Every structure is written in structure tokens, then in C-alpha cells.
Length: 400
Image 1 (cartoon, one colour):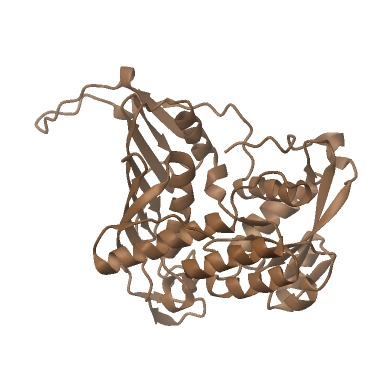
Image 2 (tube, rainbow, N blue to C red; image 1 turned 180 degrees about the vertical axis):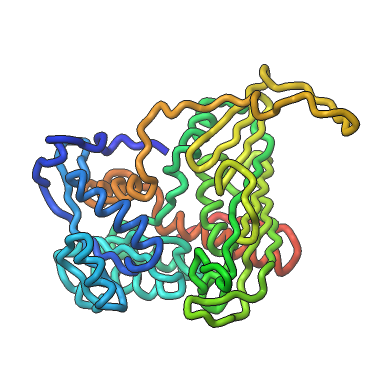
């Protein structure tokens, strides 16, 4: 993932320069976990604090959000806490106001398509979380609507901007691996059931009728990670599970979990590369980070996490022999080297927001659009079908 449209984030006196122009952003669902932490606080407010987005020609674009949600009291509390002027519970009024050019959606998946259609009809540019929709047909319909309306559109694909995966992409682009053979990923952590300790995720995640499920959630991520870093996904085989059948919701009520909380996926990439990724909310972590991706090739291997990446070249690979009757003589971890940063890494969500704002203002390239979001929905849909039918499925090209 590279960028040539933005200058480095300003500091000191440069950050205090007045903005050349302002972009208004409708932030719908901002009181939710992701909408508040990643998109409001760590992205939009951080962009405001740094003096806006600096474009390649030196001009600056400041952002002004309006917070949208169901609870006026919560919105008022957030606005007061962060010194913001605008908030409303009436989405239609916000969409009718020309001060706001971008509609950003962080709602639950079931509510997203309807709101995005309204925003497109109002002529707003679209930026949304994933999954884009509950099914591929709806996701593609949104992409067509945005294209036909002439609005710009983008989908959050945050993991592409994480330091660990940026370093891994650097290795791929530099032909470090030789011929890539296989990929193995582990993602997840233990999400408490909600009885003796509060759950870290909302209860709707575990109800299929509310759009929950780890396949729908994480396969959208794995599609853009695999496609953009390692190669296009051509086929999928998936086994899902609901390991914890009963949980406790935010009000202390027990409920039956109807959605999958673990998924064991195998993906065939272009060129015959085999990728296996386990995703689970029912696993205890014994690795360096919550996400780990190992890539093995003929010339070397790498293990990337969210922030770090380590490599072992062919010439430095030890020569172990299997003998369970004697103590292991190798410190396998000691034979791996850190990939240096060689760059300044900002918050992944903020970085993509900056690129999208530049895209809206100048038309700068932004490939992570609603069609790319639809690809994630497609892979999740095929994964669920593969699980149900117990077979491999090809991943066809999506056409608008």
C-alpha cells in the first residue's frame, strides 16, 4: 500500500496554519465501539488536531463532523466531551444539508444498506465500515448506485495500513520469498460470555438474525488482506462453529447464540498458493499479537503481526531433525530477524481516512471502494455456503 497524494503529518507551527477549505462529514453510529474509538477519536478528531489533511500541492483540508445516532443524550455528551458543535438524531435533516459532503456509516450491518442508499440519493460521498451489506447482490447494488450517482465511495480496509502488514507487503514487492508456497494465519481471543465478566464485543455479534457471525465479520478482512498483499482469492473452503452456545447480553439476560463464533478457512490464491486462516472468539492467545500471519516461500519466510514482522532467510534456516527422545537443541525464535520500520506509521484508520478525504477533494486514487467491499461480502457468503455444503467453492469475478 503506497501513497503519493499526501504530505507527512504537520507538527508545531505548521499544524496551526489555517485550513484552505473544509469538508463536512456525517458520522452515523458514532456512539458505537468502532465508530467512537477508531473513527471519531483516533481518526477525525486526530485529523482536526493536526490541522487537517495536507494535500500534495500544499493546500490543507480541515474536517467538521456532525454526530448522528439514536440517543440525543449520548450525542450531546460526546459533543461536549470533545468540543464539537453539531449532532442530531435526524439523519434525513443531516443528509439534506449541503454543509455535509461525506456520509460515513458505522451502523450494524443490517441497517447499513438502507442508510447508504439514502445518502447516495442525497448526493453524498460514501465511506463505510464492513461488511458493506448482508449479501453480495445488495453490496453490488450499492456500488452501482454510487457509480450512477457520480459520488465517490470508500470502504474501511484498515488492516492494509497496519505496520506489520505494510512490512509484509514490502517483502512481497521485494521478492524476498522467492516462490510463495503457503500462508497460515491465526486471529482471535477469548470473548467473555458476559456472565462473570463483561463481554468485549456487543451481543448482536452472536445472533445470526441481527447480522452477527465471525465468518461475515472476518472473511471481509481476509479477502482484502489476501487480495492486496499476497494474491487474488480464487477458491474457498470453510468450516464454521458455534463453540459457546449461550451468552449474556448487555442487560444481563441470557440468550442463545445463533451465529458462528469460530471459522476455519482455507483459501486457494492465484498461482496455487494455499492460505489457511483460523478466526475465533473462543481461543486464548499464545502468540505475540492477536493476529499472526506466516508466509513461507522457497527463499524465505516471514511472520507478520499487527505491528511487527520477522523474517528468516533460506541461508539462515536451521536444520532440525525430529527426535522426541532428546531435548530440543534449537532456539527457533532466535533465528528470526526483525524487519525495520523504515517509515513513520500512523493509526491505520486515520491513514485511510486521510486518503479518502484527498480522494473526495482532488480525485486522487482510492482503490478501496464499494466494489472491493462487495468482494469481502462475497467471500463471506461463499464461506458460509461452503460450510453448509461441505465442499470447495470457486470465487468468481464480480462485475458491476
